[in-house]
Every structure is written in C-alpha cells, then in structure tokens.
Length: 412
Length: 209
Image (cartoon, rainbow over all chains, first blue to last red; front, side):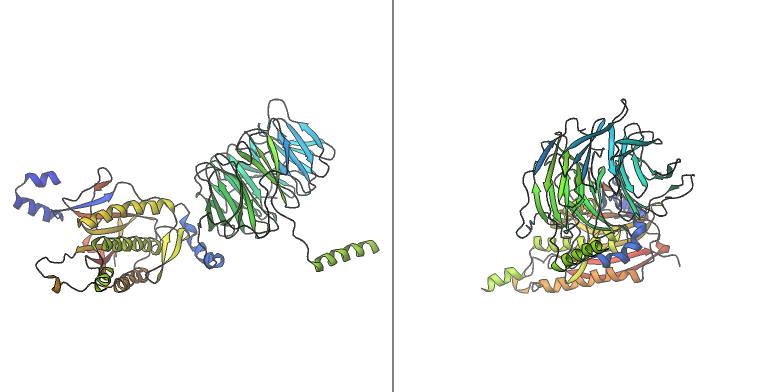
C-alpha cells in the first residue's frame, strides 16, 4: 500500500488514501506477538465472583513475596536431620511415589523391587516382599487404618499386601503402564497410570475396577483423596491439576466403568504437578506445586476451583505436606536447592528453609502419624527425618476430659 | 524558595510521559477486567488515583503489557504517537467488538510566548482527579456496553507518525480494527491533560439495533 502511494502523484495519492480511509503521514502499528491466553478457565468466572469475597482477607494479595521471614516465636527448627536411614537402591525418578507412613507408625519404602517396612517405634526393619522379576515398585500407599499396603508396579498391576501377615492378598491388573501414584479412601484404592488414566479399584470385590477417570493426557504423578472421600485431586505430567467429585466419580457404580469428567481442571502450572495436598484443617483447600520450569505453589478452593493464593519458590516442588496442628506447610524441592521449606498459611511467609537437605533432589516425603516429623527420601539414597512441628500441648481441661474418658472406660 | 516550589509543581516532559503511560497501564487493566477479557480471578486490587483499580496478576499478561508500554513511553517522549487503541476482538471470528481509543495530543508550549505568559503548571492532584474520572467511566461503562458473550482477545494498536522509530520486527503495520460505520455506536469519555500531553478517551462498540 505504501509503495503504491509513493508511486502515484501527490494529488492522486491523497485521493487514493482518502478513499481507503488511510492517513498518509501516519502508521498504524501493532505488537508482533498476540496477547497471551488466559491461564484459567473463564467459564468459572461467575462461580469465582461469588466465592472470592468469602476467601479474601484484608491486606492479602495473590502472590506476596517470599522474602519476609517470620520466625515463629521461641521455636527452633532443625537444620540437620534428626535421623538418617540408608536406602540403597531408592530409585531416582520424579514420577514415582515410594514413601508412605502409616497411622500405625510404620514407614514403608520401596527399594527397586523390594518393599521394606521400618517400624518407627522400635526402629526395626522388615522386608515385606518382592515383586516379580521383570518389574519394579512405582508407588506405595497405606490404608487409613495402616494394616494394608497397596503397591503399584511398573507393569501396571496394583498389589494389595497384608502387612501383619506379610502376605500378598491380591494383584489387580488393568493398567497398561507404570502405576506411579496411589491413594486410598476407605476400601477404594485409586491408581494413576503413565498413560494418564486413573482407576478406582474396589478391593473387596472380584471385579475390582469400578471406575475410570480420564482427564490427563500424560502420566499421572500426583494423586490424593481428601480425608472425607468427597474429592480426589490429581496432577499430571501434562501440567494439569484435576479435581474429581468423590461421590459422583463413579464409586460404587456398576461394573460398566463409567468414564467421568473432572469437577474442575486447572492449567496454571507450567510443569508436571506431583506435589498435591489437601489441607487437614480447612477441607476446601488444596495445595499443588509444579515441577522444574514452574516452581510455583497454587492454592485452590476445592468447591469453586478459584485460585486463592500463589507462591513462587526457588526450585522444583516435589512434595507439599500440611501440618495438622499449626497453620503451616512444608515443601520439598529438587535441583538446585534440594531444600525443605516451611511456610505459613495464609500469609505464605517463609518460616524455615533447610538448603541442601539432601545431596541430591528430594523426591519423596511422608509425614509421621502424630504430625511432627517429616521423612524425606532423595536421589542420594538416604531417608532423613526432620522434626518440623510439635504436638500442641493439650489445655488442662482437655487433659482432664481425656483422663475422665479413661476412668469411665476402666469402670465399665 | 519559590524556584524550588516551581520545579516541584511543574511536571517535565519525562514526568508527563510517565503519567500518561501509567494511565494507559491502569486503563488497559481496568478494561480487560471489566470487560471480562481475562478471568476476574487473575486480577488483584490496587489503590491508585484514590480508587481501587484491578491489575492483572497473570505474569504473562503483565509482561506483555509492560513490553508494549515501554515502547509507548519512548514514542511519547519523542511525540511520535498520536493514538493508542485497545481493540477487543472475538476469538473465533476475529471481528472487532469494542474499540477503546485514546488520542494523545502533544501540547507544545509555544516558543513565541514569553515565559510570563506560559500557562500555570497544572497541579498533580488535578491531573489525578481527571484520570480518576476516566477510570470511573471505564468501570461504569459495563452498564451500557453490550455483554461480550463469546470468548474475546485483545489487540493494542499504536498510531504513530510516519517517521517514528519502530523497533525492527517487533511492531508491524496493521489494519485499524475499525467497526463498520453503520454498525457502531461511540461514546466519548472524559479527557485529561498534563502540561505536555492531552489524552482524550473514547469507546466505540458494535451495536446492531
């Protein structure tokens, strides 16, 4: 256009320009990149609008800086591990979940093809059993009562073990690839597979697969049931966080294995989501952390899917664990800091950081049943124990009440 | 003493440019929020101009806007930008649905006039009050603008003079994203001025009554 205008005589050019609605001495420019797409689903706007005032606090913002270090009063946090266990053969794989701590105070850890149970009370170690030769253990999870252990294998089977009898009860086939994440709720064990599918297995019945959840296009590496079984959260290598309705999620459905859609889906993370945790003292709160290129923690409202807070950390987030007693959470990190960090919620101020907690990236973490000690497993083949929190002292009244309770029992 | 006071009250060209670009930033953010171009969830409340203004917390978006505004600032200093347009287009059909237009006039203090006749410097509070009025108008525009029912994207256009310095490859010539004459309604918004710039705002929208 410009060239044509220059070739013509000034008068013609003027007429031509006028006809086209162009002004000669002007250029209209636009930036070469198109504007970025919104990261969250706009169809939830309405729901968010109503939910937001419920969660906002005065003086809060979505992403405060991490620089403020609020050291808790009179509390000293460990800079070295309380105890170190050697774990030769602990696999160095971000997508596995090889550490689980039961309510009976037993820590299960998988060292390539063998499961070991470390009794935290006595300190004894037992080998629970090995898996078939051609495969390895990809994930572990205890039942809520701590008497059974589910083991996900590299070939796709999910095994159920009775720990007291050291016996394998059943092996549930179904998945075509590695089962890297497991989560129990009641008699349902949910398994996340490398092909992106999540199955619910009802361990009581022969036709164990009761439901199939398809919401990921890549490996499911994080999977967590909420304690009340109302919701299931999953994170995948496709950078997606999904929340599934527990009740309508097909549990207890007939054997036609209904495929269901997630309650909400989030694409805010820019790397694989392995770290997932439901808040024990605020049931509608879900924390998720992204991998290497993301390093961000997001906090979600489970009901609406609204993003409540975000926190950018210095490195890959491999686990997030809530403290049951205090308003805090711990995160474990990969390269370069290999750190364990403790932050407060909802201020998100940093309470503590153990840099280079391990010599290699911290991959696995589990919290003790009393909620005080974090066990961390890393690529340096060590399991370390960190006493991050205290059990709160009971008030006198509570103590008396519990004493009264015991007395009553004795009398009866 | 009077000298010191005068320099404080008198905004320089650089300061004026700063005021105008900052206004663009908050105006664009307000439009994107109020028109629902980006999810409301991704905006934070910020106090500005004595108002609560919503500013995006989406890092990709704020980086994008910052890149644009850095260039706009440069053009403003050189006086080579005449108009900034924010076009809201339908994602699917690429049709312009709304067109927010900000005309920038460089008001050069004429050299012929002596220093004594130069207009008195405009106090900052007055400028802020004018800007506040425009932002308020943007916020309240929701009441008369038609609802954007389809997913939208936005595009920022800069009208520059032909001899403006344009970073190679970063800015490209484009069509004006105008709405066809018969199908558009336009509402003139308020304006504000500093000693060096005058900004007039206007919104045009597609209305097929």
